Image (cartoon, rainbow, N blue to C red; front, top):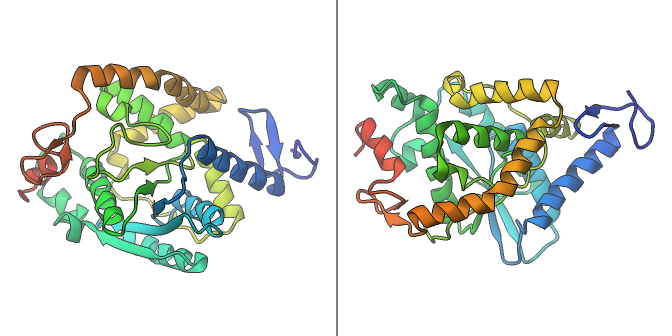
Length: 311
């Protein structure tokens, strides 16, 4: 297998586009695509202070590296990194050490928050206290993690949060929301992940949205980033993993499936948003318990905290 551009030995065969790339041309192609996503969707604008959510893994490390390269010579934009300790014994320790090391090598400030400090309970303790079999650890962790990222980013003056969702993540979210019939989550999908502006939300951006997970992993390996490959002990409970396996199987047999899922959804999104707003309106309410933003009487964080006796 040779590079479609220069004829040298290829490191990846991109079947969905019918081309193969050597190390040099793959790295160029990858970063060019990420920069295009940022440019076309205006993800970085003058005056931005961007919190880059990192975990020590391939996606967030790749994203931080590219954002650092883009912004390092700009005086009108600044970035910093944030990472969250969910309180999972034997899992987060190494990833946080890797995140510290990587941020130090890039000269990027890092701020660390934890479920214990920002929510009041660790994920391990959530699992022990939760007696609702319909709620998995990933349900609590996903909601609490989003809340912690929002709080930590706001605390340090960010007006945007960059998250490392890649094309696979987007395709999985689209399919999961379709199966669940979850319109509220569906209309949040996109390169800018928010539906209405509210000072209590720090808007999210997704610079890696148009690149496959396989490509992100290869980029990180070729760049020799210090990576953590440990798997969360609760991950096999996630509904998303079932969706992931289904989509991967389709992609294997029909290259380009993931791109098609996301592209088709993107063409529908303006109509989905319009229909959703007509049905529920655009006003964000105040949670009766904590005062945080919500579309209902109680926010999801407080609903889940109540399940484990925190409110």
